[in-house]
Length: 155
Image (tube, rainbow, N blue to C red):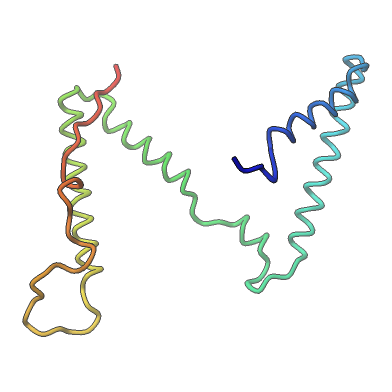
């Protein structure tokens, strides 16, 4: 077994031991003041790090500004999709739910076929003779074509 260069659990235990030693004899009021002071020190550290990051030149401009103004949030997109699916399926029976997912699966397969066909299209015009074998990576194996039964919906 390899020895770890960095053990985050050990680091957490060391920090907890250090904090315990610093605070074990404090009253509740003193402990609250200690944590407020540590919180303020941490906030100042974060602000200084952000200011330093924004001052560092980047070959693509200000990196800090670019990070804060992102235009796409995949977590938000996932949540919206989950909410939409919930609204579409919340009143369905088990059989209707199965039919819903079968339909969505068929739609997805058709979309994938369309995208694969677009990707396989050559950039330049080709002759009228078609290749006798499918393009590399498009053949499906038997294990990938097996259908799985959907999990039963929880009541």
